[in-house]
Amino acid sequence: MDVVVLDEGDSRYPAMLPKHLGDSAPASVSICGNADILNRPDKLAIFCSAKCPGELILKTYDFVCSLRDKGVTTVGGFHSPMEQECLRLLLRGTQPVILCPARGIAAMRLRKEWRKPLDEGRLLIASPFGEKQNRMTARLAEKRNDFVATLADTIVVSYASPGGKTERFCQRLIASGKNLITL
Image (cartoon, rainbow, N blue to C red; front, side):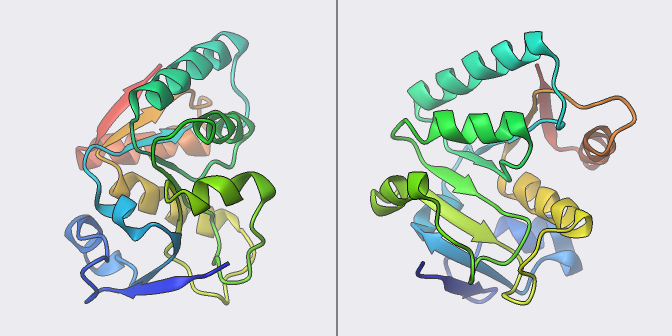
């Protein structure tokens, strides 16, 4: 996997990171894929708690298929089971997708289903973490979620378990004035 590091001075470095994260913005972002996707307008992030009620699974499936069919640029960590299904559906389309793992990507193995969209220039793997952070942790997942939310113009939350981490994350987003939509 060919990883490129974009430092804050690089013109391809996402301008929204220092603007919204201030001193918490990463000094660099590691990417693999089409860097132009980072600065596309109208990006939509998808989040969902690990457990999602059945009726929302169907609504999320239909919603993501409509995003795919409309060519909406989508960004996410795609970690929870529902988010993984969303990624699978999105990669069947032709629209750009930004995948943000909660770890560094330098030593990450490229999954077979990611190769074609990556080669076609419509998948970008992006991480605010360096190569030393090669294992996902709860702390890195929280920082990754902040990174994803900052990259996106609109955030869609399929489901947030009451009292869970996703609900607390949503409360922080709302308090910061981010555009948040729920199903």
